[in-house]
Image 1 (cartoon, helix red, strand yellow):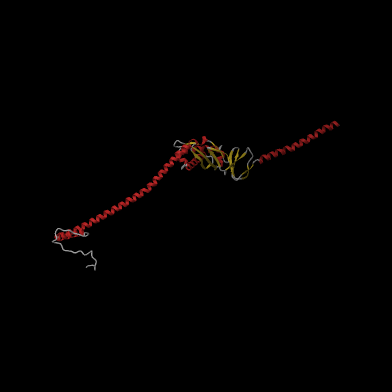
Image 2 (cartoon, rainbow, N blue to C red):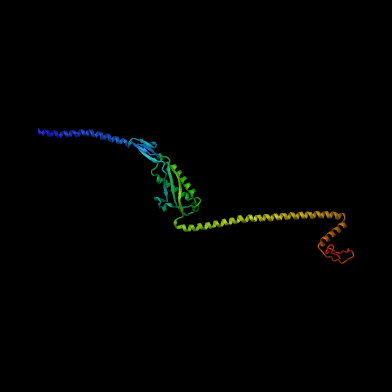
Length: 324
């Protein structure tokens, strides 16, 4: 009897375990299934968009907020930040704020006149089409950097070193950005280039001293040219004014001579008419007028024949009332 009790005593706990397992296992399975389906919930932040894929194929785009998709591997979600302004550096790398590491091989570029220039550039971009960006592109950083570096080298090779160091710097950056944008649009990767700017442009370290000497000589040349232009602008108007003044005086002198000649010609013509009408009288009058002009300032007159002279007593030296 005792043996039977021991036997049945062992069977009863086993039955309890079996019942417990039958209850717990379904609960666990249900919990796992519930958790599995709960993994389909996801949140898209305000600066992002969500791209839902079903069995690896793109199905739909969702806006910011709380959403649900069928659990993996049926559906999956790709989150893309479309508001973030991204950047890539060319010729250098930012280690930490205020600390940079130069990449000389990447920064050295050949100019159109055969010189070498050291150029550091930054390209800024953002995502314009999330679908194209997520599914047509593996690495946005590499493609943006490589295309920008290539386009920048082509633009630098089209200008002289003087142009890139002075007037053409901004124009080169703008043309580079435009060229990169065209190439990315052809690839259809959903990237928009905001800008490209040249952070530093200078001659290589080894030739800076020689380049400064050349620059100094050019500045001296430009200074001398400016001074010469300034002197020219001062002297030429002055010389033109003097020439005009001389010309005006010459014209006035010529007019006076012409008028005088015309007056003498008219006087001679008038005298000629009188001479034709009365030759003796005219001749005598002209003689007397000439003698009068010649002798009008003379105090004494000496003659060799006194028969035809009128006696004259000069009293111009005496004052009235003083005669004795």
